[in-house]
Image (cartoon, rainbow, N blue to C red; front, top):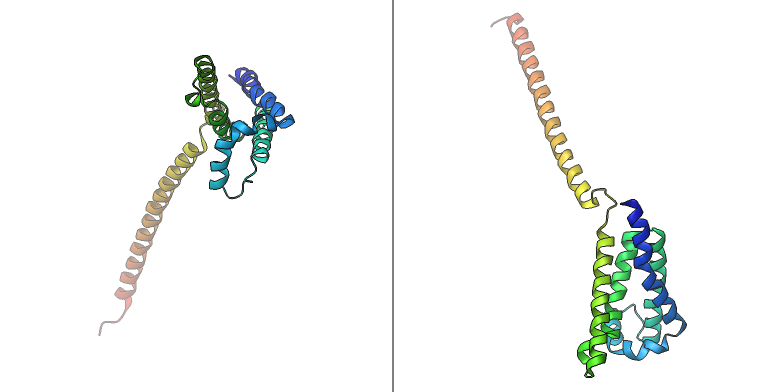
Length: 183
């Protein structure tokens, strides 16, 4: 499985690295297509610039950077999620087949749209891959359950010690009473 990961991650990342580099070199070539998606995104996310060309450059830089990280196996889950996030606006802007009237172009865009959905699925699988180890959520649940059981056992043990010491105190008090003068 490790060999498969070492081969699959670079293959999955290659389309993002090459496409991101191409768009970084010439962001104006896709800015027109990106405009209908870029405006609503920048309006909803205040930290993003409202300049479409800058948004295209940011998206391309994310694709190149996260693609390199994924290909090299560095932060693979985070990089896969970053690529997935960058793929959604790219797909909506670049392959809006439902807006195309010409049949051949519509079919071509549907194929590209579907290909990107497949890439998104691969990225989501890569983001969920724990390399054969249980997920952090699972490990947290197991640790919490073990902690509760340990606390319960400790509580029972403490209760037994307290009860035992209380019995000792009662016995000692009884012995003292026997030696006290009655009066």
